[in-house]
Length: 578
DNA sequence: ACTCTATGAATCC
DNA sequence: TGGATTCCCTAGAG
Image (cartoon, rainbow, N blue to C red):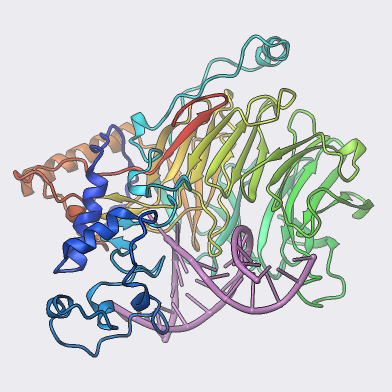
């Protein structure tokens, strides 16, 4: 396939049979050590518990731990036979870069990443298996362990049914996945994109922020219409919010410790808050602002810093109201803020202290949240559902998306947990699952995926659409030309459009039209005719073909779906699933 | 095909 | 509590 920019929305692939994963491991093991002895395999199979002598530890722990041993030219086989296990061992049996032991290797083999078997699963974080055979790594149509709905007979649920649900349209509008790449800009930003926001009224205008503090305004229909402001902030532009009373006004929050308002028509900006008035006095004092939201009813801007404090700003007076209030563990970052769309005085905050908290901003006091939602690790974001505001969606660095179905119900534990790969990586903008603002059923969310999957020999990182009511993976959006991770994703408030930020690039996705689909089918057919069955290799593949990923490939060379899926699984409340 | 690096959170004493 | 150290799928540059 040429350098097409067609998006890939793949579906209906079968799950590969169970044991393949371990086969893969062994295959790759043998490949890496040409003279694989039975010792190797045993050692690998056994794992930690069995008190093997760990002969290789010395070698593994040898000076500098790097594989700089190349002096020996003698046959590795001979070396093994002779029983010597000096530094030569390293060149014979490569050292795992993760656990520094020999006998196995972690890393990419082609487009497939082989985990270190000694570490917990990189997807679900549980020990005893790797991502290759993680029970949460599943095919799309099997990708879900159905979530149990919570008890439906409690009085609260009755209230919910009668009062809340009645107001929500039960008819789900047709849902179109914006899975086809419409356009992408290259090097628009010099550093990685950190946030995206659609203009609330101008339909084709997208705003973006990056790690250097650059603010970009971009009409993605008229591509030449781009404006950038590089003087608004001096470092990471973490978040932005429009003034709902004045579409032309944008508030931005930055790690430079300031909140700025920018008039998008004139470009004139003004500072609303500066938490570092004395400049740099060291990392212990430098304040950064991540969360920001706007209470339109009160004309109130709410922002929070990396020391756990919340600040209230009067939009018009451009002054602080009251004193900063500690809303998360002192000294820990507040990662996001969100005002409830239905009741703006209700605030949701997320923090590095592993909690998301619900507050009533009318009576703010430290240690008096309306509720504290415990998480396994840092909470990257927390959002009320966009229509009713009755649900809560959080993204946590423990690789779980959590949903609470009803904010006035029992918040002890989430209604559902969805295992999904969106781990922390210091070089990536934190992943945030976001609701589809157009989805009146308040179930669809979008989030980028960290770990890759092998797509016809290319490791790709799709953008996932997930139905949070069931955990079902609705779609994975990807393109063979986009090999980078897309942690930043935004769905258009009215149109079926997805904007994604991936490294320094921004991409716009639209639904595939019927004509597109037909054209693609024809192209595929033509290719099969030309090349015969199955040899549809990527001409532009940066990675090798996936054949090594499946050594039991069918002899007739017939193409079969080799794609393996890292997706997610739902843990419903009170569910039992091993 | 290397190597470097910008960097954030967890962990370990 | 805090400083040093470590680290698992990065992306881009040299």
